[in-house]
Image 1 (cartoon, one colour):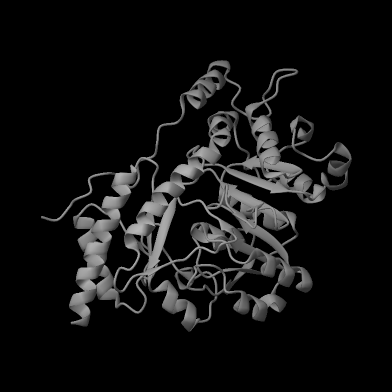
Image 2 (tube, one colour; image 1 turned 135 degrees about the horizontal axis):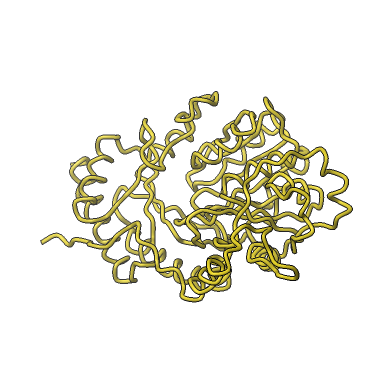
Length: 399
């Protein structure tokens, strides 16, 4: 008899009691707006920014409404103008090219490798086409950041890092988001800290930090920030930087602060689950594991594997049969966007050129969430189900 998994791939863990109590305290005093603080009071949002900056080893931090808003704000802060080309990954999620389009700029897509990272050879060939790279660490996979930064620095290309899937990850011990000029993070429900929606932006550049703060809608209340540059920096830019309001509120910040303190433990738990699934999938006929570089410290909140050169119809059978046994797989190779899955030619507001090597990889990417609500035994069961169905269908197709 076939084993069945009965858990939910969308169920998150409860918000910690400490975070619930902090949220209740904010609601009881009613000062939800980040700048609506009593004299001498330190608001939750300002404290979150201070704590996240300290955790990341960054000089400045800004809390905003979403990860997508953080990226768009970073683009505006570095001076991207309407019509400007901006390099970005062909394999990413819609908010990344969406952030580029939101400022009137043009995405220029760079290919993907079988390691699911940006193709650095393709990037090298395209570096002369733009002065900004929006680098997406898609699904938590870090490229060779040493090589990428050498290339971009030599070409005078500013790097903004989309770290929506890499909060807590690192390359050779350097935290994700600390190599580029700006690091952008998401606090959406399926990310590594959960406030439903929310974003964080870090930088060591005082002018970028000041511009981002003004863009987020600080009015002239920037002195109420704890992780921002001094007032003299704001004096230089405050009259020429528009207000594009997208602040985080004290309620979401109150929910996030206790979660941030527990992030290292949560990363360990995610990776334990990821490793159980990965181990169970190894040596499955027709299935390619995405190997992690030794230099990478990852956060395994989702897992990907490749069904390279499988037909679309056969992949559809895998998805259907796994779903019948309770395992939800997502496919990034479909011609039409489905839920959160899409590929670079899905975004028809942006011109694109076919990339055959990348198209082959994209056509085979399978994706699965690894919620912390799963036990280690759940992860082993899920791997057995996937292995069973992939093996069965692969053997039928090759017999």
